[in-house]
Length: 332
Image (cartoon, rainbow, N blue to C red; front, top):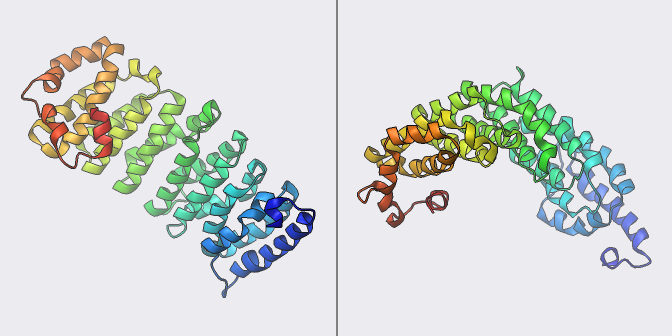
């Protein structure tokens, strides 16, 4: 209460709580007999995090990093939940956590906690350069030879997407530029569908941030539109849709049009693809006004007939149950 109300004794109370936090939470999570810091500890010490100064948190970081190296499974989730309570900017501390985060993102068991910590640090940091430096290390790791399996790669990709989708404007563009080519190459080579889907989400963010649609990336997307598994096809469509949020790409997206039209055509005979056809149609309608050649290709494929004919499967879609929120929004 003294911490929250800012009483005269607040400084002394804060010091006592800092000592208590180090003993009962940080030190208690270390070692073979360590205890996991759970939601109760997070709630109990939230006022302390709110009152911490830079000096307070900086003094705590070495102990925190030591625990994250030794017993991260007991402490990382708590730290991720506690950082949003800080009143100070976390930018200057991102570097201290970078090596640990890259390592923990590679761990299947710790992936969710590591992604949560990246998210918390990113939201609490105003200096984009510290976050792009973290992202650069993630790119080097995910595209390097040290990744042993798809489980390691998927966590790294999830952490990278968090950084690429930050509402930080143009500041994230250098990271997207660095990641674009290696991520596109990984998408093309990846055999595991879950990892490929995650990498496609990263690729979409890269293309939107850089406002570019490289020919090789377009070729990879088209391949997955036409011959990928159901989940990969949907992930590829969502990747392209995210990229095309950058309106500068609409005039150069003609290479996607034949494959998008094929999705719409195939869905006539394969009802299971009709949700995908809605996403494809939405992109085609967006591209057409910006690319005469694309519109000509759409006419050749009789796209407008699928969209407007009274007997078209598109006309029946709004009445279907279980359409899904994403497909419903795209259809609208």
